[in-house]
Image (cartoon, rainbow, N blue to C red; front, side, top):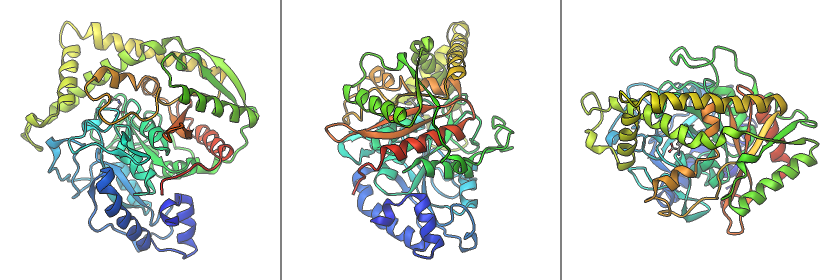
Length: 459
Ligand code: GLN
């Protein structure tokens, strides 16, 4: 069990000291997957013969097993995006994020479950069944990267790669008590990532610790000539600076994120986190971000417009099954998006939304003139029950209210476990940084985690 619970940094040390081999790690994980995955449904595909490459011993992630959200294409390995439409799709090429991880010595062991096309907040929109929360199997694991978060929390893989368009990495991380990083738009290549909403989609890690997040980011960040939206600047060495002193840092608390309807126990955990920052010598600054109230409608206009355009390629002619295999949520979003992009409505809806988006970004720009990071809840509630919101799409959309402003602004945010409710459901805290300031964000997140101390984990 120790091996299964170990962080990437611990595993790296054990491998280096010849205390364990990569084959043993993979064997233990495979056994765990066979036992736990039938209950959780976190993995849609298990790689039959995971490839450990002995010639990569000096690589940074040598021998470390991982899973990928099933929205990343993997040559020769089925990739479904959680949709029946791609049930039998075997890609011809590798996503850049996968290629980089392979080149760093990491070993792919499975593809994780998700809401079809990334549409959702609970994995209930997956065409292959819901992923259960490992802390309580009556509850959702969150979404859309619910399979990735559940896999890391229940030790089916030391880390996973999720995708965040409106909260899909941070919210499941918070629901499952693992760390999730939504990166700045343009930091990590999206080549080979099945597109949801192209002006919002980002690729990022889900891990057990903030340090592990930095170790994975060290490998996956950076320019890619296959993705014109990637930043040409050389990325930082994230894991190097996580131990820097954070005394005197300014932490902004936006009053609009502590709105009515926030669960009492979530608010309590966030209050405790603020206290920890005070204890570490940080300064707490009250800030205001008045445009936050427009974020949800702006997001759902932009996201549905862009997805209606992106999903147009699944015409059943070139690859994939027939359009009839789009699920109800995909159809709903295609219809909404087609409407908002159509002649006569484009200016009133899509174009207007892009203008409001700029105002939301301006709020963040103003805030970062005063503070180093912003602290907020990740989600207004802990994990909800399976079936609770499934017949009420608006209720489901509302659960993204605290994660989507970050995507609209293109900035990074980290979800770090803060504690548990009295019913033993995890609660995460959201730390938001300025664009391309992942180095500072991970430093602050790591210090917070150290001060918070060890939390319970799944047995
Ligand atoms: N829940 C949000 C949505 O349904 C975000 C999904 C995501 O980030 N992929 O759009």
